[in-house]
Image (tube, rainbow, N blue to C red; front, side, top):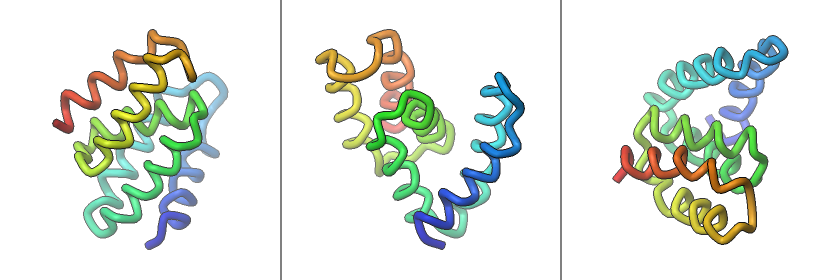
Length: 108
């Protein structure tokens, strides 16, 4: 699988989402990541790195949650970079730092 294949699988989970059912979609995505990472760790890592770099509140923070849930330490430098940008006020509200800090705690 490629990054694009993994993103297509993620998109299927998102398309099944009911309006305002974000938690349910995140749970579906967690299951998808855990299933895909067994056979294609690199594809999953690249897909989550892509979401991290989008700096889209929904997708980027979902990526952070998926990174800590699946324990993907390969993305630690990307998560650290995200944290610095949030701390500097460049992106997102500082209240999102708890998600980033949790991910860093788990993957460190």
